[in-house]
Image (cartoon, rainbow, N blue to C red; front, side, top):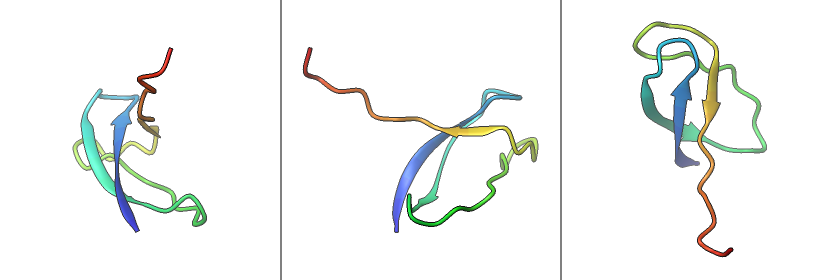
Length: 47
């Protein structure tokens, strides 16, 4: 399982957590405990 960056939509906290796209896991922000978190996808350098 790899580490992936996440962002809390409630408090704006950025953090990393283990991530596997094949496994559905409900995540919570370690700062405010909100479950409104989204994975930050890497932006492509190609335009």
